[in-house]
Amino acid sequence: MKIILLKDLHKVGKKYDIVQVADGYALNSLIPNKVAEVATAKVVEKYAKLKEVESAARILREEELVKELVTIAEKEFVIESKANEQGHLFASIHKEEIGAVMGVDPIYIHINAPIKEVGDHMVTVRVRDISKEVKIVVQAK
Image (cartoon, rainbow, N blue to C red):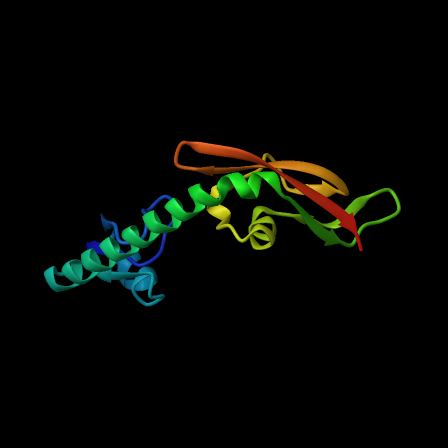
């Protein structure tokens, strides 16, 4: 069955992609959970327009971020988290928390592993082919 995805699905496709899946999977899982719709001509046309609008908005966000990237790289961002006496955090810090502090969408933030200790850490903000290192200071509450 041909469907159009309404969300990114691992190993199936990205949002607004038209994909072929098994009938049972589509009818019993994807469509009832509002993750996909049957790809009729009318539905495909509707979501093609939405995809264009969303892609134009993403391009504008990326252009703004490219302009702000130099000023973001010059700053250092502080995140406070609970830690023990040795400086180990009770809950690790992921790119979603870093993105919230920096005001940047987490998809542009790249870290090797979640931050688990108090101290200075460098993360990479990568937009298109431009990347900058940003300093994150983790302090104990």
